[in-house]
Each structure stands twice: as C-alpha cells, then as structure tokens.
Image 1 (tube, rainbow, N blue to C red):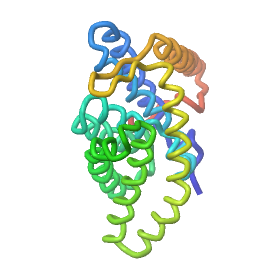
Image 2 (cartoon, rainbow, N blue to C red; image 1 turned 60 degrees about the vertical axis):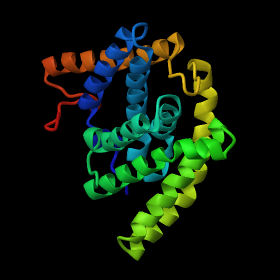
Image 3 (cartoon, rainbow, N blue to C red; image 1 turned 180 degrees about the horizontal axis):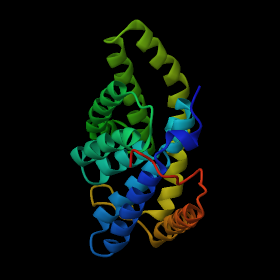
Length: 235
C-alpha cells in the first residue's frame, strides 16, 4: 500500500529546486532558449513525479519520458539520455522509500532506450508521436529483459506493471504532444524552445508554492505546523 503523498515527498527540497530551475529558466529565456527550456522541462518532470508516489501505476503521468524523447530528437540522443538518467534519479532526490537498486537499473534502461530514439524516429517515418510510442515499447522491453536476469518473480512483476504502464504511456504522450505543441517551438534538429505561455503558467504554480512556503514561515512563528511544506531532516 502506497504511503500518503504528504509523507513520501520531500516538499521543501522540491520547492527550492523548482524555484531555482524556474529562475534560471526565466533569466535565460531570451539569451539561451535551449538551456531555459531544459530547466523548465526538468521542473515540470519533477512535479509530475508526484502521482507515481501515490501508486506506481500512475508513474506514466510523469512528463520526464516525453521531454527525454523531445531532447533526444531536437538536440541529440546523448543529451536526451543524460536528461532521462537525471529524471529517473529525481525520484530518490525528492521522494522517500525509493528502492535504489531498482532506480539504478531503470536509469540504465532509460539511457539505452533514449539512444535508440533516432533509429525509432527513422523507422517510424519521422513521426514524433510514433517515436514516443516506440520509446515506451523499447523502454519496457529492455526493462523486462533486465528483470529476467534478476529473477522470475521480478520478470512477472514488471510484466504485470507493463500491461498497464504501456497503454497509459501512449495516452499521456499523445496528450503531452498535443498540449506542448501549442507551447513549444519544436523544430527537429534545430533545437528547442518554450513559449511565454509556459513561463506564465509555471510562474503561477511557483507563486502558489511560494505563498504556501511563506504561510509555513508564519505558522512556525506561532508554533504550529503545516502538513505540506513542513521542515524535514533530509533537506
């Protein structure tokens, strides 16, 4: 049974990392669109990790895989693999009760799957949507193969999980491509960029978190506690 989300997320760490990423993204918005976009994508990936902390079957809501493929297509597979690797390790950074051995194995799986993105892109007739589908299939195929080397039980667990995760990945990737197609100037091979709409939308969310953090500061002055942005030993 999954732990309550308020107990499995390092909220303050997530807030300060997100605030840093947002500030860098805004500062570099005009001067370095690619770096600005990568920081913004990182922040959005961190936030969408949260549903997966409630249930592993909600992990495909995470935008990290989507942005990994986009970076692999628009910048390069090496850069995409690095982004995907760091996205996987955001789990232990911002979450608790993570299985480090599993995280290590999945991060290697993500690297291999990302390096296959250019090949998948060419095989699918340069379709971004089918490349996203191909990435998900490759990821879970490699994940299954690696789990088989551990134990039969691990293989069956991954197989059961994949039956739900792959269809969900198809749905979320199609949705994200539709949404971010409006916000981003994707031009394959020519880099990436984000629109001012994305800056405003994420800025509104960061404002909310900042107000919650300020509220926590005021509550601490009275000696009471806030359940969301509470102090943690692991910050």
